[in-house]
Length: 109
Image (cartoon, rainbow, N blue to C red; front, side):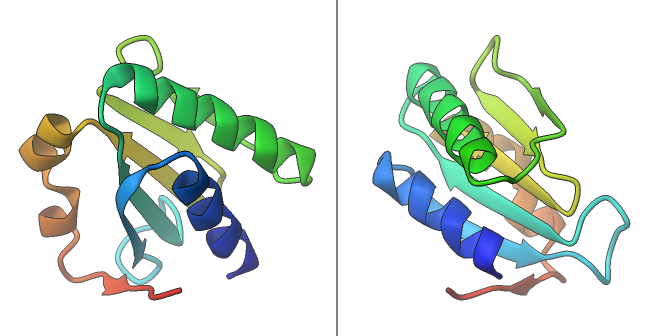
């Protein structure tokens, strides 16, 4: 939970919106948690991803890989047990991860 709190705090520091944390551990072996956040533009999404990656690594967390930075509409940061999804509003609505993973328990921090 400490990592999730840190991720949420870092995203909030850079004005990410509508941050949702889903416990998907009983639904998939991809990860234990998904963190979903909205950026107001592709540029904002890239800045959020860069900041998150830098700050997490400073604190000793490993970011295994990052996908989608070149376009910035959906950026995924894979921290092995946690996957952070940063979307622009339109892309978040289009893919509807919260709907797809509706059986996942929401984590309130």
